[in-house]
Length: 439
Image (cartoon, rainbow, N blue to C red; front, side):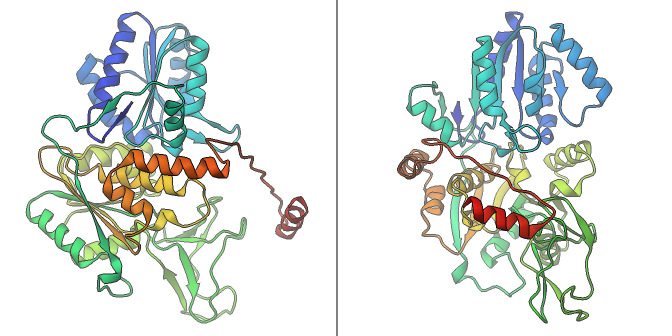
């Protein structure tokens, strides 16, 4: 089921859930993030007059054991959960819904590797139950299965009620005059100011956690790396630590360079959401600012409470990473500013174009979901890039066809298979040598 953001996909599949329950069978709805459950549970309670059973990392072990037994005995008829809920011992599973089916959170890369979307399709086939894959921006694999006739397709092309899709525009950063340590263009700042005056909300999106992605010595050029895995350490000023986003290791922010031992020359390079927050506070000192980043909350409950507070108007300006693009509904939000639309286009990931397209369309879709028109501004240094043009143009089918053609010619997924080989060792040199032998 493909529907533009705010088109009512949830209401459509909840009707399918209702039909499943009327038949006395069990229904499962998978969500990519537990932070989405608060709004979803409210909608379910309003629709059915009762709450479904929950299964995710925020549920206590005692409650999990109880739910496991209830599902197996058929006493829990409606379950909502994260990807692991797929493996509950349902007695009579009659429907599976995978909401935001494109989301990378459905892929588990620790322990047993699997994609919950694909496993959901398999489990539905095994038990003979229908499955709904719902998204405003489906993944190319799903699109290809529709084209091949393996999946059916339902389109919801307009937003529900009077709400309209946001106007999307690019800001060419080559023509903007900014200080070297500034990231918000004058045009975006002016639009934020207008929203504050109207008592509406603005969302600034930057898919980079922490304060700065690089800590650099201005004396010798040394970049602080992780002692355990050799990745760059990211400064988290709120935590007053350097954090490795690859393995999770932390260490204090150094005052002297680990390489040349010079004092006072260590400097953060590049923006993260924490650094962006400092700039926002300096530009708009009277505004209420909220930062949504997974590493700033000690529990899932705290994150959900903050999201509910924002939806009720507790913030004028919301700053967030990709967590803000995951289906949240903020009625007062009318402006989305993407700080660096080019960020996801870097690197060699074969899905870079697809994921950038999905992420930009999803985050832009947070704007104007109620009765007020929305505006999405994408700051970019390459507005002529095919992906940026596709995002702004909104011709999703043309984008998928072009992307499918490139993948088919290259023989890569979904038109071919790829295998990954992971080499790990305490000795970095040994890993490189062995990797060279394999190559």
